[in-house]
Amino acid sequence: MTDGHHDEFAADGNPPVRTTLTDGIGRVTLSGDIDHGVAPLLTAALDELISSGARSLVVDFAQLSFFDSACISALVRAHSSVTENGGTVRLVNVNRFAIRVLEISGLVPLFDIEPSGKS
Image (cartoon, rainbow, N blue to C red):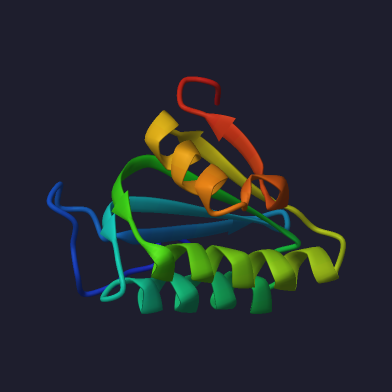
């Protein structure tokens, strides 16, 4: 699986969810807004990566401008699936505002979080 294609596109022209799977690590790049209307694409992409053999996931927030509870729900479900088999979910390029949302939601302990500028 390389560069999953979806019909909706972010303002930058990229699909909101792009995926790759290499050596058992699924990488998900998020672009634009991931809200209740787009979250089903994220859920489907995460499910596909996991069913295709991803043991761990890396979710890149670098191009993400907004996310809501539907995005958080998709990430939590993926975390449950992956960690059930000993894997991890790492969130990379997470800006301070997104980290704050995850803190308020009580989800920081679930994920390995790498702030913006660290990956």
